[in-house]
Amino acid sequence: AQSVTQLGSHVSVSEGALVLLRCNYSSSVPPYLFWYVQYPNQGLQLLLKYTSAATLVKGINGFEAEFKKSETSFHLTKPSAHMSDAAEYFCAVRPGNTGKLIFGQGTTLQVKP
Amino acid sequence: DSGVTQTPKHLITATGQRVTLRCSPRSGDLSVYWYQQSLDQGLQFLIQYYNGEERAKGNILERFSAQQFPDLHSELNLSSLELGDSALYFCASSETSGSPGEQFFGPGTRLTVL
Image 1 (cartoon, rainbow over the protein chains, first blue to last red):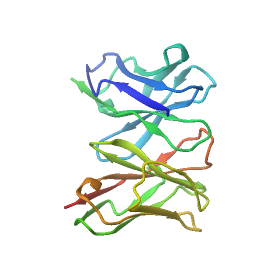
Image 2 (tube, each protein chain N blue to C red):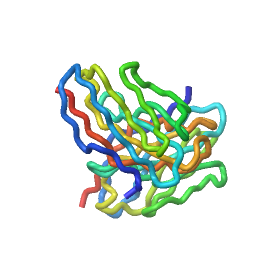
Image 3 (tube, helix red, strand yellow):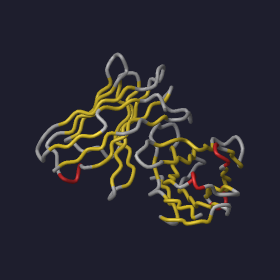
Image 4 (cartoon, rainbow over the protein chains, first blue to last red):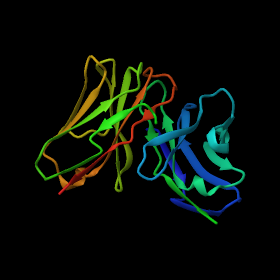
């Protein structure tokens, strides 16, 4: 079964510092991969998605992620953190032609002033 | 605002009771998904409907059931509730079923079972 592992349940960075949130997936075939963000008391919002078109994917709010098949990774980065980036981030995989999303456990990003 | 609406926002009930959660997808979206978010299990896929038909099933308990109506809104029914059913229940919708299109999430219904 396909799965997603997010390394680090909590990540803390200073404002202006690089954000790196790690995601590894297990899949026998290249899957569709997603990063979602959840702000407190809100639903999930799509940041970006990988659908095999380009390995470097740019998303909203300055985030991007790189698909590395050899490492089965899809890490999320942002060059400079803002206070407004504080939220919970979820990596997800959509296996094959199914519609369901399989989520990682989530990473809470704290941004310190 | 994703365009997906869920009612109610909060629900407090007792063990053994039955509740119904409602979801209205974005205009034009045919597929509806239900997810459960809890501290123990994280975010888990429950079930998917596409144009009224069940399309995929995940870790959904037998005490839970869902349906999608002709107007495409969906309801998730939870019965014989247990303390462990307390969670945030999300509905999401997308245009199609299997393509890698975006799923748009509603704000969720927070269920508390006392």
